[in-house]
Amino acid sequence: MVKIEQIDGKTILVVRVPRAERAARPIYVGMDPKSGTYRRNHEGDYHCSLEEMSLMFRDASFVTQDAKVLDKMDISVFCMKTVKHYRNFFRSTHINHLWNNEDDEMFLRKIGAIGIGEDGKYHPTAAGLLMFGYEYEITREFPNYFLDYQENRSLGATRWTDRIVSTSGDWSGNVFDFVIEALNRMQQGLKIPFVLKGNLRVDDTPIHKLLREAITNACVHADFYGRQGLVIQKSEDGYRLSNPGTVRISISDAIEGGISDPRNGIMLKIFSLIEFGERAGSGLSGICKRWEKVYHTPVTIEETHKNGVDRTVLTLSTGGHEQDVKAMLELYADLIDTPEPQTDQETPQTDTKTPPNTVAEPQNEPQNKKKASLKRTQEVHEPQKLLEAVRMNPTITKAALSEILGISTSTLKRWLKSNNIVWIGHSKNGHWETVLPE
Image (cartoon, rainbow, N blue to C red):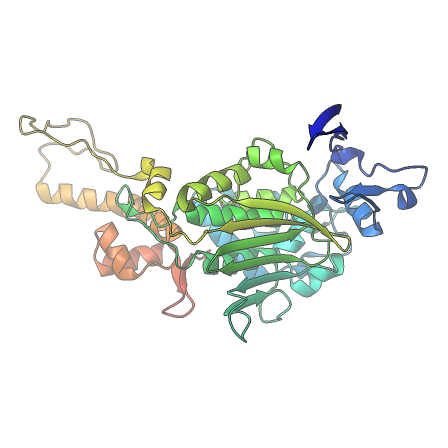
């Protein structure tokens, strides 16, 4: 588009060049893209590096880069402890799913973590390697792979109060374990209003979900072939999430929502199967709206191009504000129990229908037999509430569980055992996990 504009009393000719579709990039002058590819920044045009052109060629494909089957690797590159951890998440989210009965190989095939190579055998996909592989195996395919979580980096001589890096060697170093550990730290200190869903307290607030979407988005849009790695920073001023690679659509389209173009589509599928991230293209839009509503501070997202390295930076600044609890309640008001109050003139009516989660009994049956039948029915249905409670708050205490479920500690122990729910880690800072039976 070309038009004439007046600025400070001067007439200028404005030429607006639309952003090229990623499938058409790189656009270059002459016959050789290495010598003819240029890029415009805020100051002018500059010659693109080989690294920048490589990203353009990778992004031009209609198949996301993490769908690649790595024929030179086998399933031994996976950390099976991570796979088990993921399957526990999947099982708690999909209690009766048929995939829970599959062996690890078939389960990984169905979620896209492995695929069939040219030799007709199973091999890891790039997504599977990133999500479940050991760090030293991941760097064979992604030499620049690096994950870094930093907390209060600018404090004194220590530089940070907490840090997780994929190169430490004392954990797997893969994306899934990093997201879980970083997210636990990111969510610490958030206010949790008292909200009930049924008879369970909802500890998974809209801000908890927002941070889960934000870190998932950073992963699924990251160019793991790019330099400088994925960096998550938490401070008193909020959060900063920086990933290699630019957004594959315009930032305005990304914020508006409705369009989804992840760089790592298989990884997004794997995350979404355990309810991490969005699949409708509304993730970033929802993040902006919820954060601004609760903290009254705008979200910023920018693309940087320094020293030939592309990065996308999402900044969630608190602006010095505390969480607006009233605004948070409005975001999940549909979860709050609001029973209709009875007036003095109203007389409770006898419901002749069978209540949910109970069994209709003949009216002439002895009372003690009715109680036994109801107790048996509870044994079948009520543990599902236990699974939901543990999934919403993995660090909840036994005392709190007994209270919200309205059961004794002995009954709670029986339910935990029968549903394979165990406490992992230290008594003070561990968490509950649903463990697959051997």
